[in-house]
Image (cartoon, rainbow over all chains, first blue to last red; front, side, top):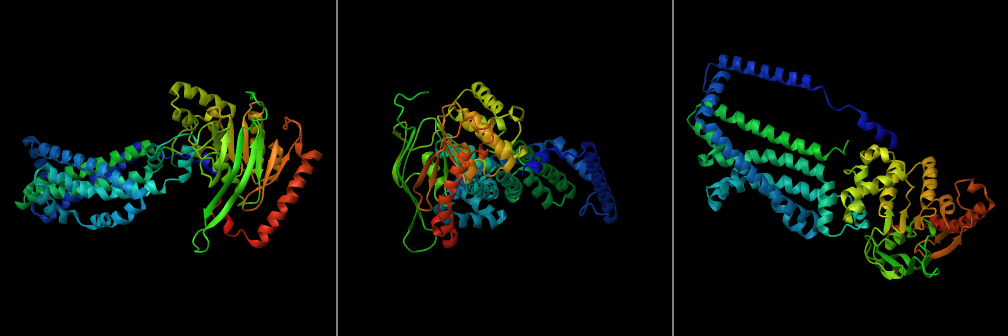
Amino acid sequence: MSAAAAAAPAVPRERPRLRAALQHAAFALALLAAWEIGSRLLGSALLLPPPGAVLAAMAELTASGELVVALGQSLLLLVLGLAAALVVGFVFGVLIGRSRIAYWTLSPYFSALFVIPTVALVPLVLVWFGFGMGGRVIIVLLAGLVPVLLSVAAGVRDAPGELVEVARSFGLRGELRLLIQVRLRAAVPLLMSGMRLAVGRAVVGMAVAESYLRLGGIGGLIRNYGSSFQTEYVFAAILPLTLLGIGLSALVGLVERRFQRWQT
Amino acid sequence: MRDPEPAAPKIRVDGVAKFFEKGGGGDAGQVRALDGVDLDIAPGEFLTVIGPSGCGKTTLLRIIASLTDPDAGRVLVDGKAVDSPSPERAMVFQSFGLFPWKTVLDNVRFPLRVRKAPLSEATETAMEFLGKVGLADFAHSHPHQLSGGMQQRVGLARALATDPDILLMDEPFGAIDAQTRELMQEELMRLWQGSGKTVVFVTHDLDEAVLLADRVLLLSRSPGTVRALIPVDLPRPRWDYDVRALPGFTDIRARLWSMLRDDLVFAESHGPGPATAGAR
């Protein structure tokens, strides 16, 4: 342990930023070029509109305010849904992780929820909870819930019992304090990977919920222009969605690094 | 520091017994880990505990720390029965027990912060003790960046930070290489000498048990009972000379070994058996 552990942090982990940025840019340019060539070869704006047309459509949607409003609606939905998934996932995750009875009785249902495609839930949930924001938030919640819940459950179940004892021996009392200061804190790496999964699934849930019955947001835009075969506008709506996903993943990564400096 | 009544023990272990459920089998349920241990430990005494593996020495220490409840008997500290852990009886763990996500400084500050000490005061105290174990320069490192010996020095600084009357040490140097261990033993004696602290030190190393102790407690094989309490009257401080070369040292070591050997031979011929299954 000693020599290897002491030497480990000296290993440089950061690759040169400029070079990485150049590589990213070069690959993106190559993709764009392939896209342009492909669309010319196909010669059909319906199948594959050229990048220029997509850019023009994006500019138009932005100028009209449509894209901005849609993005705002989607972001709000995503934030509310993910926050709800976090709260519900933590509560049930801790319950399942700490209680055998809860584990045996509840986990089959969450496993079932995990394998049901979100699309299948949408009609039911919207009928039950209405077509307003409430119903949509519940869809995003259901989409993102299980990864959070499972990672919390695994985290608090596997937390090193010895560290809990250390904390107790130095006078830390109360299950809640031990849970927050030791069990959950020790489980952060697991929690973060659960969060990553949850964010991905929540974005999908959001798009599915919105595109059902054209309920606004980015998903509504995609549905709208898709049904009238305006492919360049569909692309113009999908691109911000992917950027949203990438941005959220990066945000999770940032939080992860903040918490995981102690890991090598 | 002086007790009004010098004869009053700091720690009294009164008829302590502990049973563990036998794992798996359906036959008569319980295994005795400790069976009726009576023991008085004087204020300021350095007591080492030794015995064959599975004899319940760690269990005894955990019961004194109130991390495990005894099934019979009780533990008195300063004449009062104790039933919950307290930084007054600070533990040092074999596997160090440092929080990997906390810096060295935060680890040492932890017991102080649990006791609601203001941050600046906790920092000052923590740095003082990190200085005493020679790790002030590593305050902002994380435990995984340190060697085993350094990590246990952090564990020691953390245990000492609340200025406890009692230090409970569970094979603290067992996971540390032999040469570093000798340095750590000397360092521990320097920190303890004149501090008035009462130390209960569990070990499986006979030399270590004799080297450090005012008295050595030898537990019998499972179920653990007090087999012998042997005073070690070697002059202190013991780091100034080669204690191991003294006839007094070798005599005590030989006596302990002959007693310990019987139990070890028994354990070897009968197997560790289910008796050790529950004893940690």
